[in-house]
Amino acid sequence: MFFTKRCAACGSPGQPVLCHRCRFSIASVGAARTPHGIRAVFPFEGLPRELVVALKFRHRRDAARVLAGQMVRRLPLGQIDVVTWAPTSARRARRRGYDQAEAIAQAVARELGVPCRRLLYRAHGTAQTGKSRADRLVGPAFRARQPRAGLSVLVVDDVVTTGATLLAAAQALRSAGVAHVELVAAASAQRRQHAVVELRPVPS
Ligand SMILES: [Zn+2]
Image 1 (tube, protein in one colour):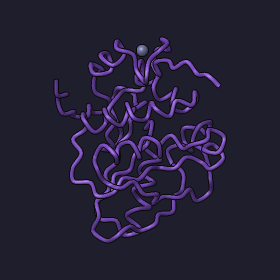
Image 2 (cartoon, protein in one colour):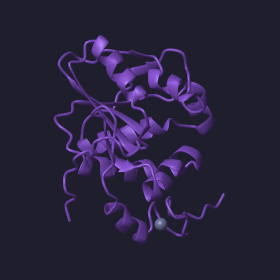
Image 3 (cartoon, protein in one colour):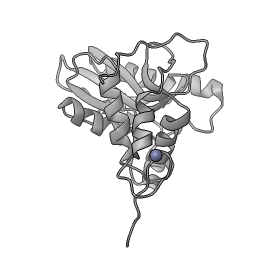
């Protein structure tokens, strides 16, 4: 089989992940608004949205690397010992061939030089997409595996909307004895009434 590579964001042919133009424009995308102290690097619109959609629905696993690179460069992450992710339902991950949150988490861990470990499991294998807003606010139930004591865990997700998924993940990790949990998403679909997340200036 012969595949022509295309830019994951704009689709122009012959590019490794992002074309030259998109590489420049993604660096100038502004800060995202997020709920409940969860941090996200991009608003879920425009070019970052295209990257997330490519990762989730167009089998562009390589888009995770671009999103992870921006997360590590632009979010003020503290001391992180282990990176994990909020797992999507097993059925969705099987259909796609990979879990998009795991793909981003692995790339973030590589950037940070720390291990990526599966610490969270869906209690009921439910997906958030298609649920009512009220149900989404409750969030999925997670079970957590306890890592070595005293570790600081970073939980990664692709898109944060109400924050319910990441907050449920944090709760499960804290119940399992994790003392320090940080929550980050690649993009935030949060509307405007919430506070602006502070971003570190992008190094030029
Ligand atoms: Zn492009």
